[in-house]
Image (cartoon, rainbow, N blue to C red; front, side, top):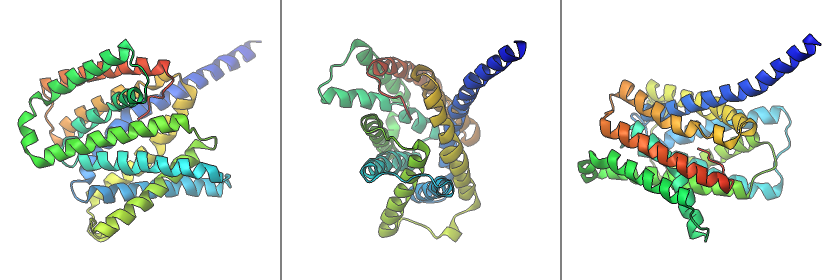
Length: 311
C-alpha cells in the first residue's frame, strides 16, 4: 500500500514538476536569445543570420522525424504550415532580428512582448467588442511605452533607430496574426514536426530573397562570434526551448504558461545591460514594469476568448 502511494505521489510530482521546469527554461532562455541575436547581427546581415538559423533548426527537426518515419502532413495541411512559416518565422522572427541591429536588445524584447495588444485591436476591427479589461490593459501598456520612450525622443531623429522600431512593431503584428491563425487553423498533426517544416520553409524563402537582393556575405567571412550566436540560437532557441515551450503549452493551464512572456523582456533587459552596457535607466525599469502589468490585464481579457498567449 505504501509503495502504491509513494509511486502515485512521485508520478504526480513528475507530472507537475517537468512542465514547470520546462516553463522556467522557456522563461529564461528565450530572453537570452535576444542577446545572442544582437551579438550575431553586429557582424553579418540580420536576414542571413535568420535564414541560417531557421535552416539548421528545420533540418534538425525534420531530419529527426524522417528517421522516426513520422507521417507527413496531409495535402490540406500544407497551406497552414506555409502561412505560419511566413508569419511567424520570415516576418516576425526575421524582422525582430533585423530590428535589434538598430535598437537595444532589451528594447526589442519589450516591444516584442506587446503583440497581445495587436491581437485585441485585430479582433476589434473584426467586429468583436472590447471589454473593459482589454481597454484598461491597452491604456496601461501605452502609458508604459510613453515612459520608456520619453528619454529616447531625440533618438527618433536617427533614421536607423526609427527603422528599428518600425521593424520591431511590424514583427509583433505578424506574430499576432500568426497566433490568431494558429487558433483558427490548429493543425492536428505533430506540432514539433510542423515547427520544423515551418523553419525549413521559412529559411528557403529567406535564402531566395537575400540571394536575389545580394544582402549576404560569404560564409567564410562570417566571424566566429556570429557562428557562436547562430549555434546558440539553433540549439537553445530553435530546438530545446521550442520543445520545452510546446511541452509546457500542452501540460499547463494558459494562465500559468503565459508567465514566460513577462519574464523574457526582464531577462533581455538585464543581460543587455550587463553584456552590452545597454542603458538600464529608471525610465526603462519603471516603464517596462507598467507595460508588463498592462500585458497581464490584456492577457486576462484574451483568456475569456480562449486566445493563446504565445510568443
